[in-house]
Image 1: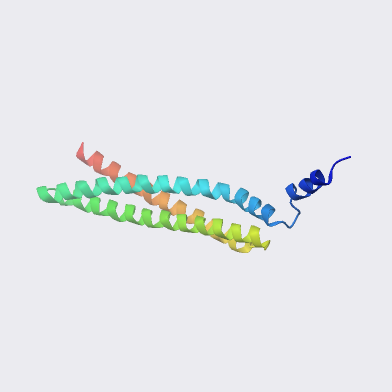
Image 2: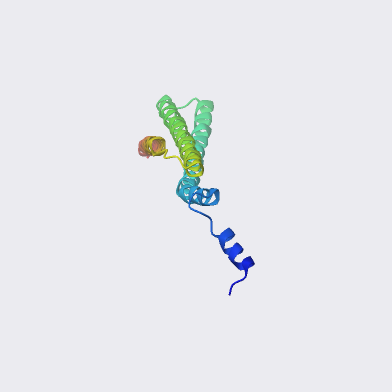
Length: 150
């Protein structure tokens, strides 16, 4: 016959359906994918920032040499595209962070906040797509500059 201590331990170690521990565990499970997405967003921001730094260096060198004004116009176009890409991808990061926060609140408070999470996530994906399109446009302008040179 099991002792009272073993029975008590079984009750303590098995949280009930409405337990805050279960809510927290569920919140952590639901937040894993968006957190991985935040890591990817950080990587994309790093790529865009490095491209912008190279464009700024090239613009500085070109303006000092007082050379091709067409190249300066293309570099300016690239700066605008990359700056906007950084803005939209950063907005994506903020929105995904909001999704994580709302998911935690929803799981802990046992409230259905899907009406908030879904639009936040869809908006985040739209912002990410826009940022990636801006990055693609920058790549096309850079390719045009290379073709023009050679």
